[in-house]
Length: 505
Ligand code: ADP
Image (cartoon, helix red, strand yellow):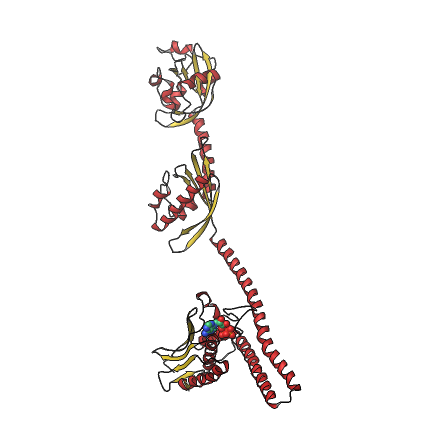
């Protein structure tokens, strides 16, 4: 049907009123003509073809009937007045007869006899625009989806509007219709393990809204296999002009490996600092431990030259001898450490009577107690058997017990020191129990490391290089055993050497 009086029907006269002198216009555009009340008075064929309405269905109806009013609130009645005056040209949505809305370009083209010409781009052209738009949208989505980082857009109420593949995969939400759902809702659509992450996420969203600016934090997400991953999460709040919440953009990157590397670096740095500190402590301790007996040796050997009294000379040579032994012990300890460190110690496996051996060690100590004037110590050996044949390294076993008893003696002023043996089915315990100064909880493990002492540095009140326990523990392990300590500060300690018995022996 032509607009320009081509079709001769009852309305043709009326239509000819609105005719314009361009036939092409009629073919190029869908055209409506409205009167000053905004009622449709004319519908061209192209409009019927494009939008599906017969002219009889629209004529005398208000133009607002086919415009998506709720989508374009500015389309008040007033709009048409303004559009007409200003010769509006722009995009609007028109509802087709099929109820589908299509975006069209509208041009208010001409005013004639109090009537207005509304020229719409045909939906075909709009479809093209639409498909261009869709193509560009698809491109954006592809871009967002190809990101290995998680991307999520939420509205002001925390409802998901768009989430990329990485985000959906992370929370096992692929295939879930997430649109319009909040984190709390979505927690019900995936494994329970993610519930906590969703709740945390809601809390950090809220913080971000309150903070009114970009926020960044590490978020921990538990995975199905029980491990945890760390995400560096950036949240960007967007507000409407009136200050109310509009959108929240959430971006997150898996930084688990990075954080692990960072913490390894920090630990390595701490270790390096600690080892520096240990080295200085070791040098301080060693120079003290070497200098004290050496000074005694040099000092008393100097005195001997001028001394004529034979008794004095005997005393001096005894002191020189004792201090030389201390020096030798220290050197032997250092030698043992280096042998252990370089895996050069061999553990013997010969049969001996453990009871006899323990008694031999025990018997040296009453003399030492006397020498130190520690008469208030109840020093006992408690053995369950008269003899016990054992296969192992007698020399190293004696070395460990001697070391434990020496420490007990050094750190106990009064009370008791007990050397005990307890034999069980699969292992035996040799323990040294004392009522000495005790060891704090945090030092209990450290004292088994080389050169570690409860008191470190120049201001120590007890002698020793901090090697005895490290050597003893390593020897114990080489003997298929272990060494443990129980202690209470101020009350005393019990060091136990446990050796597992090989029934084949
Ligand atoms: P050293 O006795 O030469 O310092 P050790 O390795 O034998 O070296 O002991 C390390 C540290 O453990 C000691 O310096 C001391 O601080 C603590 N220690 C060892 N035995 C005892 C004990 N029986 N009571 C209290 N502290 C002890």
